[in-house]
Image (cartoon, rainbow, N blue to C red; front, side):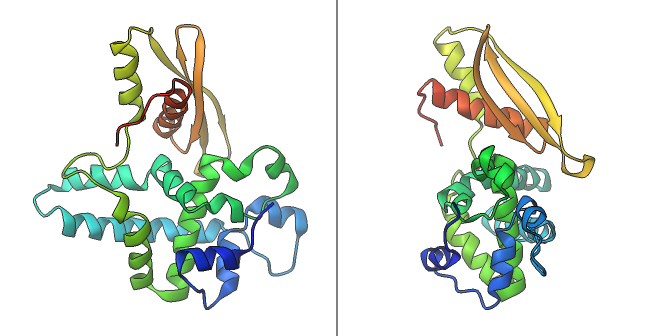
Length: 233
């Protein structure tokens, strides 16, 4: 069951002037298709806008924060911040999944905690905030809830779960890891990949993502959790 968006606004200290934008940011297409309420829009267009706003604001943050880094290094750092696993982490910290409006089918299949959905909602929220209050408000929000959590002078700014899983299994002599892409779904412009990581014959974890790499990172993250490994950040 989704929670009241007034609660979310109070928690993050942002009051939307156009509350319909906030509602749209948390409305999944499955809800619109199921209810067909006049004037009720899903968050896909806001996701498109939020993606571009994130690229700009993260680029500016990195440009100012790491003056000694090359273009190639900054590009890699930006990719590590705006990739799906990273956005999912930020969305989970803010409990965004609890506020999403979903259709019954999507709800029943665990859509509220699906990584691709959470990443999309984070981007949609950024797009809605930009339209409602402009770029400065977006920067303030990201400074408080994204940039403040990043660390590592010149290092990768989010966790590389695959490397940590590889190092752990090798150190403890647990067996060989194998990643498999077991499913692909969605239209070509919005592809979602499902990955599994196996150790010998045992399934350790499964994950999804908008690229094969992101899906494998999610699978490795679940595997580390199953093995009760403390993740190094």
